[in-house]
Image (cartoon, rainbow, N blue to C red; front, top):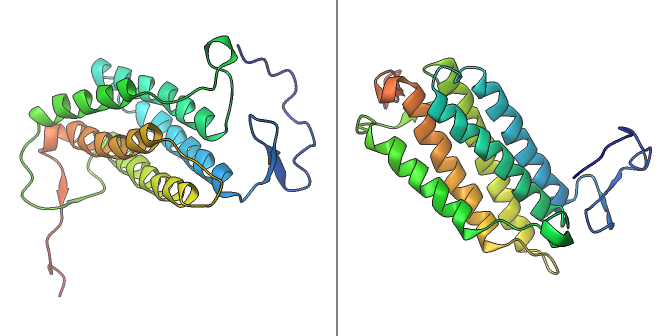
Length: 190
């Protein structure tokens, strides 16, 4: 259990932050940027959920994702808050669950005949925003993994990659199962 008695510690006033391992890193460090960007994804999903409360299934899916995102962030932060003080890592089962959710949502969607522009319903628009931030987080994670001495697990990368796909199909689902998607009209304004 995490206990936070003090919100400010003053230890970050010098432009550094502490990883779960106790190591200090600059606040612009790629590892900090990776889990910070996933925190942005999580926050936007929280806003999207304000508009998904009418659909208990999609809301429950997004609630689980919010919790799982903290697992990914903890792994990137090198936290050791798992069972028995073990390192908290993302699992293949979490990735498989996302894939099954994507497949289930995609089954009921109208087939795509064009690229989809972000928009539609409020929930759809916020889920599109979460998707784009998720893609940015993935790019940062790949850049971090490619740095000497750094590591990002394959399952964490897969999870974030699948999450952006789920956010896409969830946005379409919330847009009347694809009926009210905003479609790209190539060259329309030439």
